[in-house]
Length: 120
Image (spheres, rainbow, N blue to C red):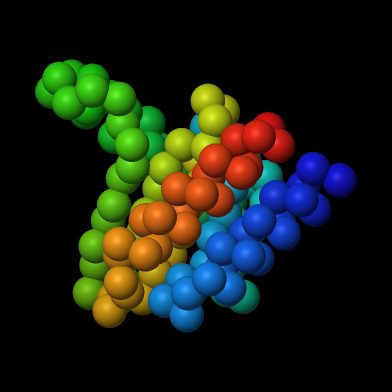
C-alpha cells in the first residue's frame, strides 16, 4: 500500500515535466523503496550510488560548515542527477535531461520529497 502511494507520487513527479526521465525513492542504506526507471537501468546500482552520494554530501556539508545538506546535484553531458532527503531514512533521486529547466524541477522535487516524507 505504502509503495503504491509512493509510486503514485513518483508518477506524478515524472509527469510534471518532460525533462524528468526517471525517479526513485531509496532508503539511506541503498535499498529501493519505489522506482520509475528506464528499462535496462539496474535498480540495485541506482540505489547504492544514490545512498552513497547523499551520505558523502551530508558529510561534506558538515565538514565544510555548510549547514544541513539540502540536495546533491550531478551534471553530466547526458543530463542531471538530483538527490534530496525525503525524511530521515530515504532519498529521492531524479534523472533529468541535459536541457532541463532546473528551477521548476527543483520545486517539483521538493514537493514530491515532502509528500513522500509524510508517507514514510
